Length: 235
Ligand code: DC
Image 1 (tube, rainbow, N blue to C red):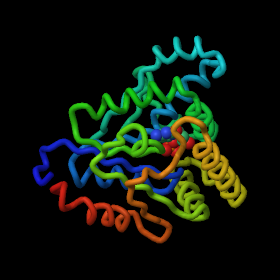
Image 2: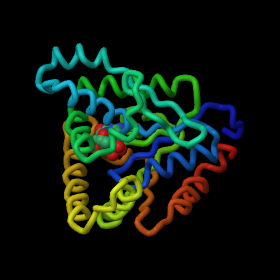
Image 3: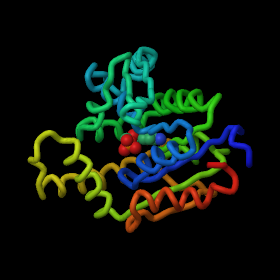
Image 4: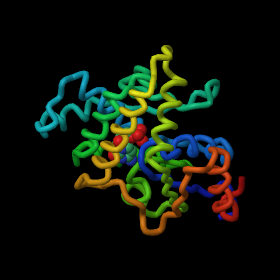
């Protein structure tokens, strides 16, 4: 696949805060293609379902509601990042709070929701090269992806990253050791929920390349990926 114009798909899976989205974003910049953080789609759906008090056990209601949820991911070239729109309204920040974070893991267990998300994700990739990160991208969404990576990192490192990310984004500095402990608990809970669910659980695809990012900077992570793909995808 020497010719850059040939369409490619790169799947990056792994547990929460393993570096997937940051790596996907930087890689997309280097490869001049789009990246989709599929977690943001589950998060946007979770926000809608929570705000509208939808009973997850009511499949009929859920089916009807899913038809009313329009999720768009647009690239903001000024900020150099994606913005998430839920029914036309930007929700990029709102979907990052811990309540929606945990709820997204709960709603992601539902088959009907996953089917809709997978359909949307494949549609986005129909006519363009793409880097997509998530939990089931290499196993379910794009089983024939050109490259599949599975990023991992120790729980302590992941908690630290999430803590710093939240601190960075938070207007207040009232984030302390207690919240670091809570972040770690939440991550463990989410790891367990995402990897033990019945449908499309988080797991490494057989032909994925695993990268332990615990002791790697983001630049090093991206470089490792580039070293692997560079013979097939021209930068
Ligand atoms: O990547 P993230 O932390 O933003 O994802 C939020 C949740 O969405 C995650 O805990 C499980 C769900 N998810 C999923 O089930 N499948 C994906 N491909 C992406 C996310």
